[in-house]
Structure formats: structure tokens, C-alpha cells
Amino acid sequence: MEPIYTLSRRRFLKAMAITTGAAATGGLLSGCAPANFFHGVASGDPLSDRVIIWTRLTPDYDDNLLVHWEVAKDKHFRRRVAYGSTFTDNTVDYTVKIDVEGLRPDRRYFYRFIYNGAYSPRGTTRTLPVGTTSALSMAVMSCSNYPAGFFNVYREVAHRADSIDFVIHLGDYLYEYDKDGYASEDAEALGRVSVPTHELLTLADYRQRYAQYRSDQDLQAVHRKLPFITVWDDHEIANDTWREGAENHSEDEGDFFIRKTQALQAYYEWIPIRESAPNDKERIFRRFDFGDLCSLHMLDTRVIGRDQQLAYGNYFQADGSFDSERFSAELTDPERSLLGNEQLQWLSAGLTHSTATWQVLGQQVLMAAIALPAPLIFQQISLGDYQGLLVKAQTTPSELTPAELAILNAPAVPLNLDAWDGYPAAREAILQTAKALDKNIISLAGDTHNAWASNLKTLDGQPAGVEFATPSVSSPGLESALAAIDPTSLATALVQFSDQLQYANTEHRGFMVLTLTHTQVDSEWVFIDTIKSPQYTLLDEQAKQLSVFVGEHKLTGESLR
Image (cartoon, rainbow, N blue to C red):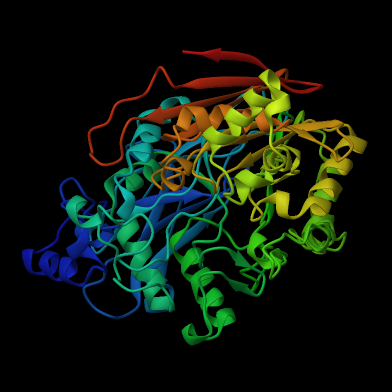
């Protein structure tokens, strides 16, 4: 007979007492999983014959814990296809990850765990297709900041689970700041104060923050209903991480390598992902093949190969002038790396050998070149005043002063040096490879917290692919950083000034739904009106869909609804 759910009141209370961050869940206990499965279940890294299933136990004693698991074709588990048992303990923070093998391609499966007579919530997952594949639908998300607001975006994706095959999460699954850090101004009022209250530095810190995030019922719901394909960005470690450091890491915070190692250990414990290489947690880049339709190349543009970011402030001289010659030389250095040689060679080989219709790059930061006039980047003039000068130049150019002419004649410079714009040689290597191989390239990006769509071009202006970038789950975007500028005006100006950029929404939280067929890829951006309340509405008047067609590296088929 299968075990039944038996858990005494004493053990339930004890489990709740020792659950990491349970006191800070903001009233989310209603409807949550059984006590020993307080953080729900998840699945990820699907292949055609296997998938990772995950859970975490909230133990009532510190010892090796025996956990049973089972996978079935039906939700009642009458037709089991795989089952087994494993142990977990505090060396992996009581997480359980099973790489379930021997599954059939393109199938939906149900899974659950059993501990001490209690069932976990039932999860749903699926495997990748092989051979002829006519269509595919994926939700694309990034940047979920717990104290910033409620995870309504996760809830909306969970509501749409029947029409979505997989979830791609492009990083910033959590944030490392202290309780008063970035986007935390409403956290106390919302009941979402970060735990631990200090900045994350140790393995215990990162584990506790993951536990808090995974206590959220909306995040649990989308994990329970759909398999995730994930990659980290910077905040899983520290803001603006690069290969040997981070902006948000100082000498008095200890050895960065130790911090990074512990942060990545917690990531692999709490995320349903298999290690790409034994004993090498930094090597996260990997490939997923969806039959003959799509090859998804998940890239790491953050940790394994990134050189340190450039900063405009380092190029201003004592007299206030900008050393453009030194900046240009360092920016365009052909050795400047974002992926590292090993990953670049791996990607080139993958693009060469894949025969799928679409080659999709799942990665963190914007690949498209997005530039603004230098006086705007350096805040020497406001957007409104600059646009006024443009009007003046068209209507009464003889009245322009020398200072105004200098502003109008100033060159355009990259908007974001933390993106591929800060590594143009590395970007050019990939685009030239894709163009030489005649591949249909689609770049997916997160990181910026806003929505973007661009045509990708080589340095000589040749079309090389397209990019779709997702807004954030909850982190604020440019509408917060540039609060004095109307978001619609800002988006219009960005498109106006940037040749590659075709669409921007710098105002709303949301996600993308990517739908692929052999002739067309549609990207639909879905926006919500608020994250400051659990009640939200969809902004239908803001939703946008853009399409790209086989052999046409240009965004077309634009529609608004």
C-alpha cells in the first residue's frame, strides 16, 4: 500500500520553526505544501530522455533523511515509469535532485516525493521532442526581486501553463542585497523584508535567501507546473559580477573566489539543474535540442569568461574632458572577452553542427547595439532639452550657439557597458560566425528589467539576427532610474537614436512568450499593471507581438492589441 500523509501537530510546529525564513514569508503559509515540503517541487534541464526533479525537505531532526520519489504518466500515479529512493542531509541543505532517466521524448509526466509518510505536491514536467517538431512555446523571464513586490508575473505564467511547454529563466533569480538594499523601499509594508537582513556573503546566507524566495507561492506554482531551463546572471553572486570580482564586493567582505564558490553551490542546490561538468560549477553553458525546430544554446556571459566592465567615469580627465581615444581603444580591444575561449569555441561548434531551423541564444545581457548621444549618457543635458535642440537645428539652425552645436555633434556612445555593447569584439565574433554559417539567430536577453526588440547587425551594418529581451518579474527598470522622463517618451527616443532597436517598453513588469514554427517566430510581451499588490490586471493595451521569418533577419509582422 502506498504511504499516506501522517504528520503530528508537534512535528508540524517543529518543522515550521526551523524552516529558514519561515517567519518572513508575508502570510504565504495558506495553501502551502505539507510541512516537510515547505518549498514545493520543481523540475528542469529537460532532455529527450530525462529531466531533473527537485524538492527540499524541512527536517525535524539533523540526520540523513530517506526520500522516495516517483514519476508517472498519469496524475494519479497508477502508471509509474520511474521511482526510487535517495538520502539527503545538511551538506546539500536538505535539497533533493533526481536525474530521472529512461523517459520518452516529447511526453508530459507527473512526479512527486514521499518522506515519512507525507506526499509532496504533485509536479508536472515534460521531455524534449526529437525529429520533426512543428511548434514550440516557451515563457521567458528574468530578474525576480522578492522585496520589490509580489511575484504576479510568475503567477500569470502558471495560469498559462497549459499553453506553454517550457520556461527559460535568464538569471537574477534572487538578489544579494541587505534588507534596505535595492528596490526594498516597500518591503516592510508588503511583508517581504529580505532574510537574512544583511548582504549575502556565505553559503548559509545564500541558502537562507533561496529558502525565502522559494517560500513564495507564486514561484512554487510555476515551478510545479512547468520545467525550467535556467542560467544565472550577476545577483546570484553580487551586482555586476565579472570573472574575478564584482561591483558589489569589497575587500573587507573577504575573498571573492570563496564567496562566488559558495553562491554557486547554493544555486546548484536550489535550482533544478544538472552540472555540466563534474566538480566544475562554473561551467553552466549547455545546449537543448528541440527536434529539428530549435537548438537552444544557454550561455554564461557573466562568470566564466567576462573581463571587467568598463566605466565611463574612469575616462574623464582632470579638466573635465572625456578621453575618447583611450576609451575607444580599450572598448574595441580584440582580446576583450565576454564568453571566454572555451565557451566561444563550444558555441561555434554547436552552431556549425546544428541543423535546426532556429538557433536561439539564451543569455543574460543585451546583445544589440543601443547607443545614445554622449551628452545624454553623461547627463550634460536632459532628454527634453536635447530634443528641443534637434527641433531648433531643423527650424532655425542659424540660431544654434557653439555650445549647442558641440552637443549636437557629439558622438553616440553605448547605453550600457555591462551588456555586449561593452564587448563589441566578442559580439562581432559570434555574429560573423552565425552569418558565415547562414544560421537563423535569435538572442534572448534579460538583465535590464525592460522589454526590447532589435535587429542584430555586424559592425559593417550587415543583418545577422534578431533579439528579444524580457522585462523583469519584479525589479524596477529605467522608469525608476530615469523617473523624471516620461517612459513613453524615453522608449520613443531610444528607438529613434538606435539603429538596431525596433521596440522598447521601459515602464512595465512582465514576461515574453516565444512561439516557434519552421517558418516564423513570434515574441509576445505580456505586461501587468502592478507588483505592489497580489491583485493585478493584464495591460492588454500595452501587449505587443513581433515576428521574425526564416531567412529574414528583420523584425516584421508587428501588431498591437
